[in-house]
Structures are given as structure tokens and as C-alpha cells.
Amino acid sequence: MTGAPSMRGALMQPVARIFGTSRGAWAALAALFVILPLMFRSGTALTMMSLMGISIVFALSYNMLLGQAGLLSFGHAVYFGLGAYFSVHCMNAVIRADLPLPLPVIPLAGGFGGLGFAIVFGWVSTKRSGTAFAMISLGLGELVGSSVLILRSFFGGEEGVTTDRTRLPRLFGVSFGQQIEVYYLIAAWCLLCMFLIYRFTRTPLGRMCNAVRDNAERVQFVGYNPQVVRFFAFCVSGFFAGIAGGLAAIHFEIANSGYFSATQSGNVLLATFIGGSGFFFGPVIGAVLVSYLQVMLSDVTEIWQLYFGLLFVVMVMFAPQGIAGLLMMHRPLWSTGGLPKVAAAYAIALAPALVMLTGAAFIIEMTYHLAVKAADGPNMTFFTVPLAADHLSAWLSGGTLIAGGFILFRLTWPVVAAAWASAQSHKEQPL
Picture 1 (cartoon, rainbow, N blue to C red):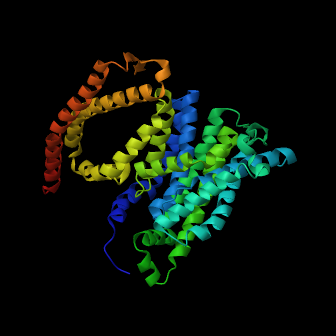
Picture 2 (picture 1 turned 45 degrees about the vertical axis):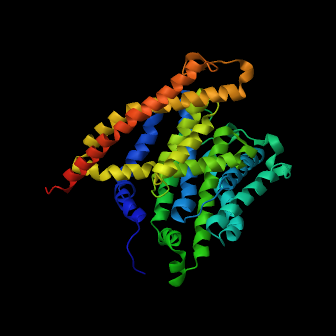
Picture 3 (picture 1 turned 180 degrees about the vertical axis):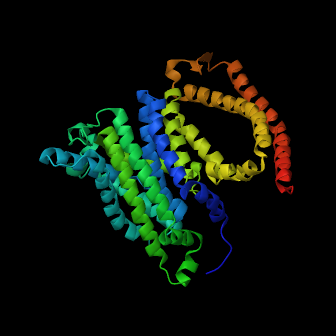
């Protein structure tokens, strides 16, 4: 089968040369995982980095469906949650029977649990693709989520199932009672899963997943069954999602119905799409960003999920290839020396854009306060600034910030366009 390579495949080639095939790149990533807790020592930072590691594995497992096989799933949290439950039950069984099974191998129980149910559910759901597959995944998610209150012996009802990771046999004297020990365990599994998932994308099966994503009819024409290819991709994805769930169970020492929620499936979809599903490192960027914003924004505002939704809408409309796509778009400018010109233009446009966004957040927060928290009175604070949400001056200030910021931002567009044109002309000049 011949044909022009897809744009996505063409863009992934330089990333593969830089990120995947270089042993130095993987060694640098491992070194980064090691030194991060030495740079950020607080308990909050360690917790956040642990959550980032779990989210990276979960997002990469999801991208094996969305980015590699072209399957949009609304119920991927099923395998994450089942992996968490299998890991918790495995830990409790080890404690009760006093088995010589250390904590670092527990995520495999979650992985095999996710794999087992992926085999069962995947054989049915992968018979269809597109919208039908998405609806089937949503139905399966609701089915498993509702089973939490029915199969109490396994799921523990609303309270879930708890465990104690420190009671498992120690490995080299490490009890994993401290957060930094848990972080290094999650980091090790995260790095291993990243490497294995990347290697999967370079196998013939991984390439065939890309072919099924791009044109299933041609794949069938050359003798392959697209449903079988999707099924294998689904099973591998479920395995790594189960490992992510096992890491979450180790981190929180509990498995409950929250792991199966639509929010969990939505978060991994947001992380993967915002980061860029067409690139291997896209879900990694998205997982890190979403995890950071979840922790930080939840401390700033009660409606942080609304801002996540707005960010997703903006990315869909203006950057469908995600953050990774934006970065790769600028890669030629880096090699030709035109990136500083474009970066300077971006810096000029950034200030009015921030003013406009501040005004929008101002209006959103006042609207939420008057609509939901009216019983608390009109007085509120916006970034430590006290104000009265029912005063006209406050609304005029917000509107002025939006209008003024947008006008100034619009005036910077020709500057950015000129910088791009200059960088492109510099690129085309012969050396």
C-alpha cells in the first residue's frame, strides 16, 4: 500500500528522532525525575508531582486509543478504577496472608485487572468505531459505575475499600510511609510505562493502529482485520490504565466510586486533547498541565472546572493539534534562528491578552458569586482585591478590561504576523 504520509506522521518523525530513539533523552528524563524532589521539597510539591506521574501514565494509555487508533472513549476511567480496586484487594490479601510481595509490584495487579476487563469489554466495543464506539464506552462506564453500589463485597459501597501500604513487606528497608518514597515509586513506574508505550507505537502493531485510524477500509483491503487491530490496542490501553489506577491506589490507599466517575474520564480526555493527541509527548504535557491546574486552581476558585471547559473549547477552536502541535509548529524557527523574533512579538501580545482574560475572569467570578453565593452578601474578593459584586462600577471595570484588552490585543496581530513573515523569509534564504 502506497500513499503520501499523513501530516501527523510527518510531524511525529522529528519528535521520534529527538525524544524516542535517543538514549540520552531517556537518561535525561530519568535524571529529571530523580532531581525534582530535591528541588521541590514541600509535601504539596511531592503530592502534585506524584499525581502528575499517575496522570501521565493514564493519559498515555488513553492516547493509545484516541491518538493511535482513532477511538474516542468516554469511559476510559473504567479500567483506571478497576486497576485501583484490584491493587487494593491485592495489597489487603498480601497483608492478610503475609505474602512476600513488595509494594513496587502491586501496580501489575491493577494492570492485569484492567487488561482482563479490557479483553471482555473491548471485544464488544471495538466491533464499532466512531460515534458508536464512543457511546458504547459511555454505556460501559455507567454500567461499571452503577455496580459500585450493587457489588458491595468487591467495591465496598460508597465508602470504597481502604488499605495500608506500609504493612506490606519492605523492599531494601523502605516502608513507603513517606511521600518522597511513594513519589519515587510512581516516578519509576511512570518512566517504565512511558518507555514501553513509546516502544509499542514503533512496533508493526502500533503502525497498523495508525493505519486503521487513517483509513480502515484500506487496512481491510490489504488483508488485516481493523476490529482485531482496534481490539489489541484496546487491551494494551486497558493494561496501562490499570497500572495508573494501581499507582493511584498506592498513593491514596483507597479505591472508591470516584475512580469511575465521568469526571475522571473527562479529565484524561482534556489532558490528552489539550496536550496534543497526535504526538507522543502531547499527553505528557497535557497531564502535567491539567494536574497542576487542578491543584492550583481549586485553591483559587470554586468554579475551576468552568475554566477547564473554556480552555478545552479554545484549544478545539484555535489549536486542534494541542500544545504539542503548537510547539512543533515553531520547531523550524528554532533551527533557522527566527524564533527570537516571533517570541518577542508574542511577548508584546501577551500583556493585553492577560488584561482581557483578567477582565473575563472578573465577570465570571462576580456572576458566580451573585448567582450561587448570594446569601453571603455582595462583598467578595478577586485575587485579594475586595469589591462589591452588585456595584455597577465593578461590572464597568470588568467590561473595560475585556474591551480594552481585546482592542490592544487585536492591534498586536499585525506585529505577530510580520514577525512570522520575517522568520519565514529568514528560513527560506539560502545559507
